[in-house]
Amino acid sequence: MSQPLTIVMYHYVRPLRDSRYPSLKALDVQDFAGQLDYLQQHYCVVRMEDVIASAKGEASLPENAALLTFDDGYRDHYDHVFPLLVERGLQGSFFPPASAIRERRMLDVNKIHFVLASVDDHAPLVDAVFRFLDTYRERYGLESNETYYQRHCKESRYDGPEVTFIKRLLQKGLPEALRAELVDALFHRFVTDDESAFADELYMSVEELRKLHEGGMYLGSHGDRHEWLNTLPGEAQQREIDASLSFLAELGIQSDDWVMCYPYGGYNDSLLAVLRDRGCALGLTVEVGVADLTKNDSLLLPRLDTNDLPIDGEALPNNGTCSAITTYS
Image 1 (cartoon, helix red, strand yellow):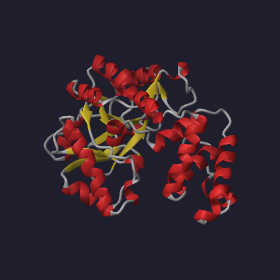
Image 2 (spheres, rainbow, N blue to C red; image 1 turned 60 degrees about the horizontal axis):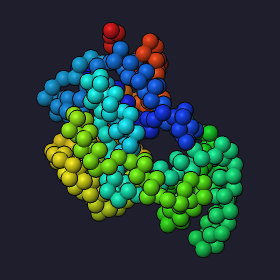
Image 3 (cartoon, one colour; image 1 turned 90 degrees about the horizontal axis):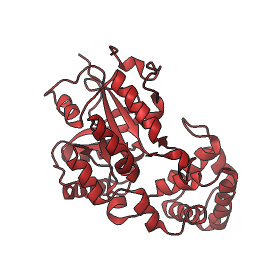
Image 4 (cartoon, rainbow, N blue to C red; image 1 turned 30 degrees about the vertical axis):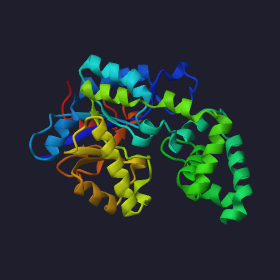
């Protein structure tokens, strides 16, 4: 018998329209509340502990089960998500990258997001990237600007070609040291020179994470430094996972039956072996789909993005979600 589970993935949730970065790819708080209305109308929102028990064959999920997951440890989650979940008696599962919380260090992925959100026209960003590549082309043996542009400038699920080009080039398309230097240069030029202050504003604190846990929320692993874990050698994968588990232990999270949320969705066989060796119960990917605990590998569960669901409690199930619903309330 199948056990479908709609796992919803969230990142930024904030009062977007009145913020300093209204073009940030984020969900407005009012829309989040509307989406919770929709989920509570059509689904039974379950706890992570219920999902773990079901995956182990110790329990069964209710019909139309849904799980709410929140990546990256943003203060948005403490300020705006947590109160709404508590008010409605719902649990969310939160996955903070350890180093961002411990070190108050801006992750490159977030630097890129805010660089993109700081300009209305992305052409100057592309020009700045090209000038940077021209400066370092000989030292790093770089390919031509046109080669990089043709390789990475493609339409993606949520972004236009120019934005996709910038994201892909800065996330994986250049040598690591050069990539980090370019991301820093763009962040300092288009956003701020004070990374520490920006990180304090962006990420939750250790104390806030503890309050989430004490308030009944679930906390899991999102790695240490938000790396593409599938690109790291085995020893580096082990260090990433062990550092994140050490961080969770500091927060009072037990090490048995813990949950992994893959940064960027990156995993490979080597990483899966590390997770199994350390007692990981579930793994959350960014592959799009409704999970089935009787069919999916428990470490490779797909998720739906918040953009795949309506933000109106009165909406009927859409094509992306109706296949997961067996009855309507």
